Image 1: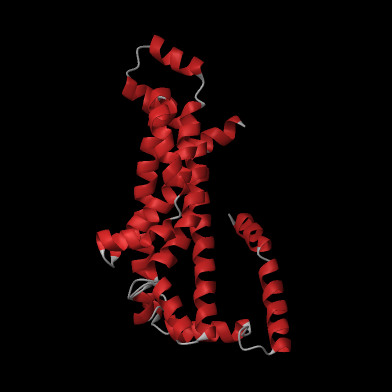
Image 2: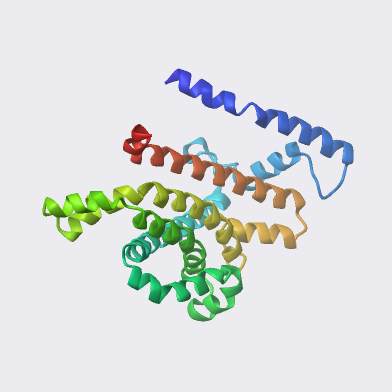
Length: 260
């Protein structure tokens, strides 16, 4: 365990090097648009991290924005995951269904979610439902296509064997198709997670709370350290989400790694 923690820390050696170079370069430039990281961190502390240790140093502003943003992101991601896997597996296992629905799906995939914000605003007004709908629509495609590809690539021999042993359709789905497609499904889910973070910020530009709202408010107030602080926060959040997902993926696909 200790060796694993040390290996993980060793992988982060580049972070302090980049921070030092960034600090030196921005202080040498003395440009108002590029504040040094020490100024950005100090401003982030004033904005969000002046709370008590019992609340992980998060102040009221942070607690009033971070959980809401994370909740929308995860809600949209879960909805996209469930919908994408369901439709994708159906398309992957049914050539006839794929033939009928493929033009509609290709049309939907070509539509950028930010361009549909006026439609979502008209349907749901401003608020959580509009933001979740934007995130879900924008990130469902990688999950759907990966699930379809994974379901399409199931070994026919495995399915024939399952039929010989009398497995029902439901049992074949749960025991053969989904496990075989799982690596590609997880790849789609991981890609959609990073896209969800981007769309969360865009959707929250039209909100009155959340990290995206704070980023936009800082831009309007010409608070450049605040803008950089929100960007750094989003980068850290994206990194942590990706690491958390990789942790779960490794454990869920242990059987697959053992076969490789």
